[in-house]
Length: 548
Image (cartoon, rainbow, N blue to C red; front, side):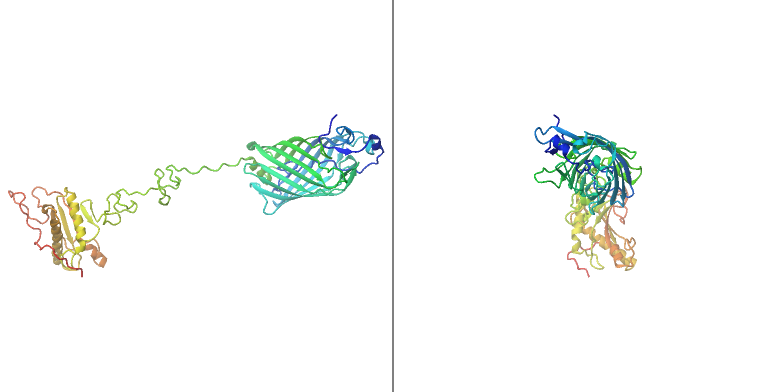
């Protein structure tokens, strides 16, 4: 014998007793009340309302087997006694509109296209149930919870308050109406993942008139539902849907089992680019309560006018989430990406723009700050430059050679500089002629300055000779104030003009004087003979005078 898998009404009755029973008040047996928005999961909605003034309309068609049967409680409980509603084919015509992006209003007009069952004489009416009747018109609403309104392009948590109002427009005798006004407030909470997966749950209250039908209480119920939508081919708009939905009976007689009809349904959905959404699926009930069929099949078509905000939201849903952009390359692995790395091929430091600290001469002063990046500064250098260095045809010094005021006496503070010059000459024997130049500012006459510059240059030359540099490699000459480096109208300019310079001269040509200002050697004079002094000999400095 076949047992109903979904709806079992346990009745302590015999057929004879049943025939004598007066007709009981009937009720709406339809548990399948779909949600009409295009992205609602059939029996369980989603929290996001339609976009403002976006609309949808469509049809849900469902077929249920054995939605209401009687079984014999005594004896073989699996024996079906009477099929009150043996099968039902119902169409729900639905329309929904969004308001201000916060709310959604809808309408559902059920129409029983066909239904059948046994002769209902046993429950007080002759003949089978009517096959074509209206159901109760339903008005629906949804309002997003502030702070939990999820926009179409967003993922994350969402919530909404729902409300349904049933108008008694259906045929109660055909089990298609409750015969009175009903209402159903509820709460809907869902979560959409970045991948497009939607998990949704709902719970509420279905306030309906209390009925006692053949010893079983039918009244207020607490509907519930849990649903999921999972993209399968998201780029093509194909998803899988699944849900468990039902209702817990809140009223019952003493010793009467609680009425909890429930169904498990699965389906496939296709969001087309034309604005049409197609869903098809099926499942069955628990076989333990009123209103739960043993088998149900359903299909739907919902239309959203193309190019509306809601259509754009569905099209966006069909697009797979963009993968995160790859990190910018870091060719040298120094944690500074190539787009920011000034030296993308060399590992370096972030505070240096990704460049290494370069110190070509190894003097501890990095090249970007080193005024002499190819010459080591040495212990007395400054700014990366040594105290004395060769550059072109000059031996450059970082500090001036200082003399006593209006004298040719070298101050002791300049001895280290001249020692460095001497050392450079000793380590560069290829320099066979060095001219020591003396220069002055313009604060005296030309003759006085020329004489002073000659004497000061000779004093420096003599110091180098006494420090071990060969006399044959040294020359001296004074230029007075004839070659200024700056204007003589400021103290700073005059300080620059008072200076000693060291110029590297090329080897003397045949017949050329060895030093500038020397007499030309006469033919036949023995080479290596003592040259005439370039200036009047001066005594060597012994005790330096102090600067004024």
